[in-house]
Length: 523
Image (cartoon, rainbow, N blue to C red; front, side, top):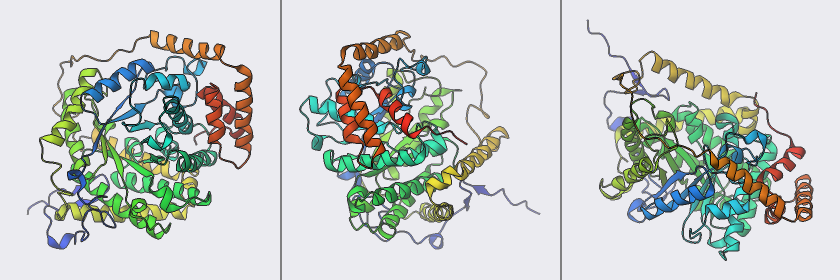
């Protein structure tokens, strides 16, 4: 008697058949660029405009990161993406004792408008779009960017880019939060309103599933929890009196491009279909620009291995291809050495060239949604959408994303998924090439980036010199105005802008808000 083969199941619990046929999925009837945008937000997709190559970079000092930016732009990168160090992300200045040993280590240190000016030296801000991965103090970093542009004569309506500004995922996945969820939501929606008035071309949030997946979620959970957070931001914006058609057009999303290539393609397609329906049916959005989900994708950092690191070149190329076939608007490809260190210039260049080869040599820009109509991809799209709908319904029952996070439910779901994945790897059920199969005993000898220890000392000195040379009374008065704005219901960003202009630092302003709002302690 023949033994039935073991079923194949995705990380989302979807059983994969040996073959698919016409009865497995009906397939979308709408063309690309039409509701519900399963096949893409634009009719011609990459034929009209290829995706933006947006490599994430930031380390050491503002000057070092500026040099890396200018190198990447000279080599064909089409947009900037700023990585900030841990103290900046947590609202601490570089001379705060808490920051010792972390300044410039995982990104660039930015304490003030002057640091931002050094970071952007020689970069045409009216020509280049910039993405900033910053969340709890997102408003402050965006204001620094606006002030630098203004000092150079670039008006706010000429600035293009995205600020991540997605603090909800910090509570469930990444951990870089400062304030409790509700005042953090107030900051996020104040930023929405501020940009609608002063920075109309700026994407005010990048609602991020990337870090949820990095924390160990499945593809279906990444999809559901990201869109549930999106719903929470939209509800907060509506409560603040903003129009869904207006703020909806400036929302963007950030997804992970993981290893199971065809499941990832289906995930991106399902995300567009589901979000369009949410915006129309929950929020009454009628504008296609507000209904159509646009997203940035980054290849999976958690899939990179320290063992046999050059294998990561292949992983990254496959993951990037899934983002392209899934219709991403911009993509970052990880460097092969990122499991070990910040990328070297050589590894960063190889990551850039990966996208350029895919764009110019692989035929990826010729037609929209090239895998649309595949019985397997259409079936996966349907099943991922259905699983995400179930999870969102459960979050609704718990009172929405903020309540589900405060209760710890979302965190628990991700932790259980991460445990299952790790157990499968350790038991050999999930193969990781070079790790639990095809391993080698010989050490891999590759060049790694080394951080200059003098960077921290120099940055601390710059920040202390800034304090010594500014008008202390003007700073004190501006910080007092920030406190008054925070205690009222007015938009806090104008007061923050004036304080930054007076040369208050990021850490000083976050400290003022910590005193008023408190800090968040994870369960």
